[in-house]
Amino acid sequence: MKKVWYPFFRIFHLGHDQDAPEMIDETIRKGVSVGGANLWELFFAILIASIGLNVNSTAVIIGAMLISPLMGPIVGIGYGAGVKDMGLIRLSLRNLGIFVAISLSTATLYFLLTPLTHAQPELLSRTNPTLWDVLIAFFGGAVGMIGATRRYSSNVVPGVAIATALMPPLCTAGFGIACGNWRYFGGAFYLFAINSVFIAFASLLVVKLLRLPEHGEIDAVTRRRTRLIIAFIVTATAVPSAFLAYDLVGQKVFEQTALSIFQGIDKDSRYVLLGREISFAPRRVMLTVGGDGQIEEIRQTVERQFAARGYDDVVVTVRYVGAEKFDVTQLKQELQQQVFSNTLKELQDSIAARGRLEAEIKSLKAGQEDHQHLIREIGAQYPEALRITVGSGSKALRHAEAPEPSIIVVMVVDQPISTQDRTRLQAWLEARYPGQAVELVINEEIPQVKPPPRARRR
Image 1 (cartoon, helix red, strand yellow):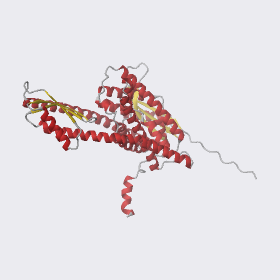
Image 2 (cartoon, helix red, strand yellow):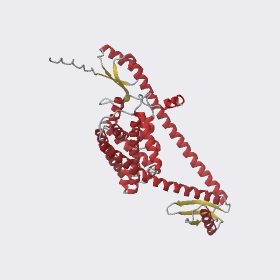
Image 3 (spheres, rainbow, N blue to C red):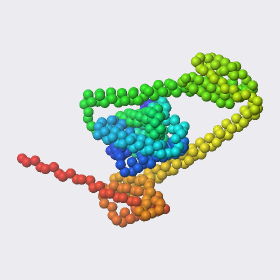
Image 4 (tube, one colour):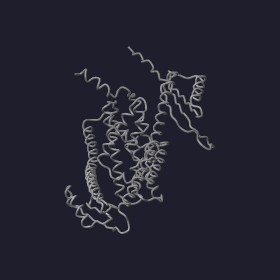
């Protein structure tokens, strides 16, 4: 039996490409930091997300998710709890608070100044979190932590940033503050809390699963208290979403039932269904019809069909516009053509947006793969290199009109590299990346030699 199951477990084993614990620790601590580029990235990301929500642009919102640094402190909280590093937990909580304060302030200021004050569908979708958001945050946090512990970078982090969506809820909360709608603020900030808590919780579980080395020791009483606090926070965050999910399911079932009833009524050749309004709480239905049908007959028919499906308390209201001024058959055809045209346009827009997103992801993935090949090639040529870091960016001089693309290569070596080798490496990089500026930085890190132990006196 052991021989049968061993290949199965080996396939799913996470230790094949896991990075060294000290490199994992360094990567996560860098993501927790506040200051410099991180704050500017956050500031611009929150503005981009606010504009995307304001104009109802899904592509713009996705772009803001990809550049947001909010994941760093949240993962740091889960990682710190997993390795028992209270200092890292406190630092991550403090920096997350700074990030949230800056995000809310920026989003509120934007929505106070923008002339577009109408709540768009992309914005409203962030005001009603449910249990499904809990599951998305948990699984997204788990796969994000697994990706952070890998030896080589992958497209996991951008995918997690899009799936968990930390930035849009904070923008929506800022919209709620700006317009004085505390229901919007509460729903959006609760969604952000769900994402934060369950990303951190999933990161904690992955750290325990990978058995990363602990950085501290805590006594049994503190360990028990910490576990109770974590259990309380996770439960308190998840329970309200379960009730909201129950209401959402009930609302969707009611809406589907109403739509099926309306489809049956609309097939009657005596009248045409011009409009409908469905309200789940309280359960009310308002229909606008035209043709030769009778209002009372339609109302009784709809109420009977609702009652047959278990909804006895539905209040049905029918508005009648008459049949003298239009042909029912022609009107139905015009409505069908309009619906088909609108649906086709939405489908074309969706396909175009998806194509642009796939092209961006493909470009990012190609750049990451190229950097991995470059690291391996440099490592093969210079075995004295301890660490090699490669990144893409932009370079601009003080009086330059526009920045130019650049490649940054940072090497940490344990032996000095001659000027000739530096020049050869610089020339090789410039030939490999024509048309781009190349920044080569070489730092020496000479290992310290411990002095021999002193001889004991006799």
